[in-house]
Length: 118
Image (cartoon, rainbow, N blue to C red):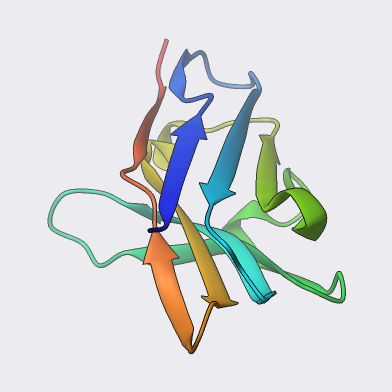
């Protein structure tokens, strides 16, 4: 059974920082990619940042230069350091892992709320 547990969300003022963490439990044979998505009510879930098993990263244009993703495949852990937060970053953030146990599948966390407001 696979379980993704996120932490680190909360309320922060504009310009502040937060660090999200996600730990995945499961007997993964390999992890292809780990990442973070976010969603606001009435909109589709969107990719924020991802990192491959080789360490290649990809960021949404809106967060480039402000957010940094990092991961540890050996520990099935992924982090998102968010700096210079803006009100438009307010959303529920979801951890995502594409990994293989017997077959390649995608797994999602339960989401953590990030609110940027003064």
